[in-house]
Amino acid sequence: MRLASRMQQLPPYLFLELDQVISRERAAGRDIINLGIGDPDMPTIPSAVSAMHRAIENPLWHRYPDYHGDVAFRTAIAERYQSRFNVTLDPTSQVLGLVGSKEGLAHLTWAFAGPGDVVLVPDPAYPVYAAHANLVGATVHHMPLEARNGFLPNLNALSPALLHQASMLWINYPNNPTGATAPLEFYREAVALCQQYDILLCSDLAYADIGFDGYQAPSVLMVEGADTVAVEFYSLSKTFNMTGWRIAAAVGAAPAIHALGTLKSHIDSGPFTAIQYAAIAALSENPDPFIHEVNTVYAKRRAHAAEALESMRLLADIPQASLYMWFHTPEGMSSASATKFFIEKAGVALAPGTGYGSYGEGWLRLSLTTPDSQLDEALRRMRVAIQGEEGQALTPEVGRV
Image 1 (cartoon, rainbow, N blue to C red):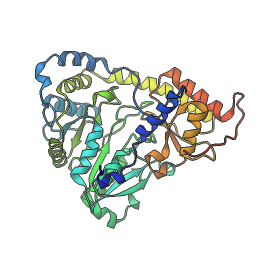
Image 2 (image 1 turned 135 degrees about the horizontal axis):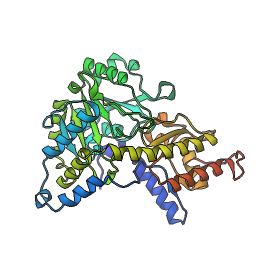
Image 3 (image 1 turned 120 degrees about the horizontal axis):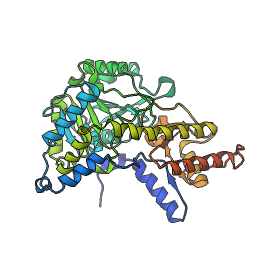
């Protein structure tokens, strides 16, 4: 059989590769602690679980769902934006139900980019942005995210000639993988730029409610005029521990929401309606105490991880938000060789920075979505691998993956 030529442009998916490495190691009898993937380990918000039990009994919800999402679900998303961000949305024209935000991110690119277009993608970044730009035949322009700039792209470095070719600009704060945050002023600059050059501004807000020390992430739609150029993705996966439920929404500029909905209607249906009603309960039944409780757990883990990484002399900045610690590799190691080192010498799987782009070289990502006891054990193993049982620095011989 012959694969489509576009498949030659599609690299192996980072987490699929990581899972395969972990599976091989475990099959060989090794105990591997996986800190590589951001998949919450805590229970789903109880209101969603209770609502799901009720909704699943309704035979109406076993039929095809509304292509755009149930109006009640879209209304609940709009109400969440009103209460959380003071942003007013029309549920019927500015909110679209998604089968998880990942499919929405992918499909939006198919609706707005193609051969001859440029898609502006952060580097490092969630791999889906660049992967689907490549699949549709667009040109990916990588915008470096560097520590010296707070892991924000330098929008002033984008030339007018490039911007005239661009159809989409991706931003993601709180950021995956770096954990960086963006001030509202950055969003103002991005909105103004996209208005000037007629570019769709795509904001991935998957970590909207994961914040520490009182930090609350803004929405790009808080900027005046953003609803004319911006689409934002709001996911319940990380906030409510619902990754497996596959439920999210795209919100913002009505023409873009309409285009995404039209494309999706030729590809899939809306989310399972029973899950939408579970999501309504999660959003509507005062979720703030639950969010605070979850963030308290992550804050504790963040503190433990920061202390351990600092003792290994690996720590960069302590993040204000997201589920991740983004830190330097041990001296002399690449991202790939450090990943191999920690799997082989510590039995700990981390995500290599280069899995998110070339500017991720020299970095690793650690996820806080592991039970406390396993996280502490993983950090202990990492320290021993680097420093030895007595805390003396070692000089490991490490090959490349």
